[in-house]
Length: 177
Image 1 (spheres, rainbow, N blue to C red):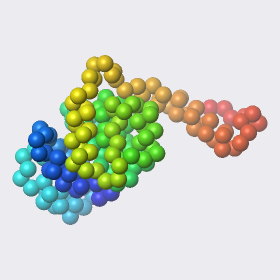
Image 2 (cartoon, rainbow, N blue to C red):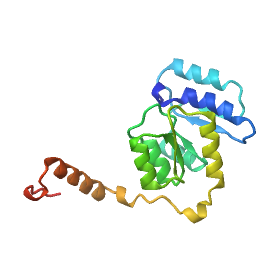
Image 3 (cartoon, rainbow, N blue to C red):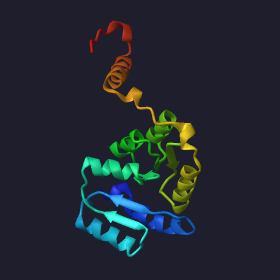
Image 4 (tube, rainbow, N blue to C red):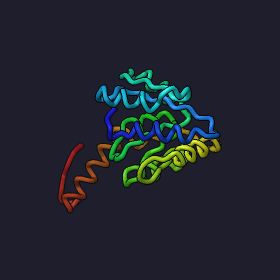
C-alpha cells in the first residue's frame, strides 16, 4: 500500500460518510512504510466500523474479502491499470474508482452498475452515493461480469491489431501469432 493509493483520504471520507448510513470499511494490504501504517491507525482511531488488516494476504483471503464486499473502493489519486479492480470485477463485485480515460473505458466495457466513477479526489458523498446505488441495484437482473474478451488469445489479437495499426499498412505486414 503506497501513499498514491489514497487510503488515508478514504478513511477520512468514510468517517464523514458514516452519518446515517450503515457502512463498514475493511482495509487490506501491507503499507509501504511504518509511518503510513501509523497514520492509518491514527485516522481510524477507535471507529468500530473500520477494520484495518495492514498485512499482505494470500490470494484466497483477498478473493474471499472481495466476494464478501458490497463495493470495492480503489481511492487512487491516479490509475492507469489495476489488478485489484479487474480481480473485483472478475468476482462480480462493483468498484468505485477515479474517473479517467482508463476507468471510463472499463465502465463502457463492464457497465455502469459495476464501475462507479468519482471526479478528482474521493469524497464522503461519492462513497455514500455509490453504496446507495449498489444497494438499490437488482443484481439478479444484471448478471455476472463477462471477461470473455480478456482471455489470452483475445488480448494477443488486440495487441497484434494495435501494432499493425501503428505500422500504418496492415496489408503489407505478415505476422503470425
